[in-house]
Image (cartoon, rainbow, N blue to C red):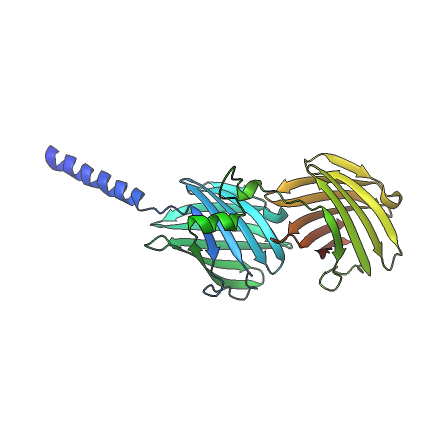
Length: 312
């Protein structure tokens, strides 16, 4: 091959590589899930979901607000598109993500454990030619079997994006990720909607919460099989350990933020047995419903509870 042809060949290869790199889409924007057009497979459908994506390749951040069947969920996934593993902990779950390009589609492989079972998810992100529709095709595998989902997102205009994100069109614009909820108020437990697992739940319960971040005070009054109980827990949301003694029990609590969800880890001894509880607080978009998802670990085993509170 002559020197001229060799140079030309390298030029063509360089141009091809450049065009291939340029063909990769940018997913930045505010995306609203079209529930009617989406297919959730055997899993319960979302009532409404909005993703705010910040994509500066290879960095990608997806801030999610989802009114799911399990209650309101707010979390952020941060990853890269260069095949490096990223670990996120939305709602207290440890989620491992590896994202890579497959031509112009982004493929995200996810591994996590849900209720003690391994779950793997392979999701392919495809952007329409006009850049207005994002399709996420997911294949999920677990010990219970396999299922497929197809989520259709539609890009929001600038004004709609501001409204969805809950931001003001003028002045300082806080991002969705920085808008930590405030749980202050009087909350009544909806016993009928709650799930206490194998442990009997209370007949009634009311929590009065005073939240001035990072200070959190929860005054509880409940009545049930164990009789009437009234106690107050004083905690913080900045990762510092707090010690309270409701009913003579020493309760150690550590509260911290995971995205926009408050996660409280508790340790105590009950009848000489160690008990650990991890509770994730989820606040609905309208601020009227608080869901507390709790995982308890004891010498007798593990269990999950879901408590639904309604603001009074």
